[in-house]
Image (cartoon, rainbow, N blue to C red):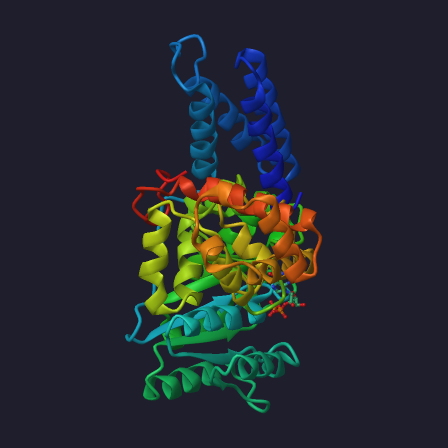
Length: 446
Ligand code: GDP
């Protein structure tokens, strides 16, 4: 089950439970059984799932909950907490500091997505104002240097490597020295992989590590191996000081949930996940926002991150202010649509907003979603300032709707559909009223 499906199944189970008139033992059991099934289909280890079920039942003792207690909320919170517990290794990773040179070495098996991930990691930091550089110390795989060079050139990131030199240690040292002189603050060393774990791979990793003294070693792993992730992460950790893990191909694999929970069980912090082949299909992995998003509850910190990335600096305080006033007008919706169109992979951004689970805006249907947004914007272009700035739903009477439809060359029912969408969003955003913008992983806004 791919991640969006897993999230969708769990969210659906919670929704079914919420819809029940009375929450009794049977409703709770049905809900937990649905969640259990979804997790097992995602290859999460049986014992973890069983423990989760037992823990929730212990916390949610329906007989003891006095009338007036919000049982739905207590159950939802318990499911949220237990999922977080499964995924949280309880240990943060070293994080490089901007402006201070850090060397980060990537290790992993061939085909895991290591080279792609090195560039994604560099690109992610470059967008945030770092000065990254890439060193190709993979002399084992023919074409590795070309691949890195191609990716680095596309992302305009300096790189170092050689077609002639066969000693990975020598290249790694030369590359790191060169970029230290050039004041790069994030020097990323891509090492060789092998088809399977073998002594020669681990020996080479050790030598490169000894020579370059990395501040952080990142182990890259393909999520399709599911629960087997535990053994693989352990084996790498025993050979070299792995400080963090990046799990790739979370977009296409049924075993993603299993891989993530298995890595967490090794107490290795997962710092990013790869969600596609493109450079920006790469997401910070932070347990609470991740689970929150998985359940369609929104990921405020991820969303804020995106706002900081794409909304021009001078507009940020104003937007946040308006949102915290709960005053969501059509103009704000228009401006947000503009931002969303700029933000790139639309499904990623939408899935961070509360109310839009990844299931509602599925990957692969970006074109459709994008076309819909553009259609809505054309209709809003035919609105007056009064209409755009009003938060009074009664203002939009039939004659105004007809005028807008005519102006945009659309049917009146399409204008109505757009206004319905606005109302839906306004309702969601009204929850932000009076709230402080949540900090990373804060649940209070949910
Ligand atoms: P390496 O041998 O470990 O360096 O692996 P590569 O970086 O060459 O990647 C192997 C294949 O996996 C390539 O076709 C990549 O495009 C693909 N890949 C890497 N990361 C992801 C990901 O997150 N999602 C998907 N769908 N493909 C990925």
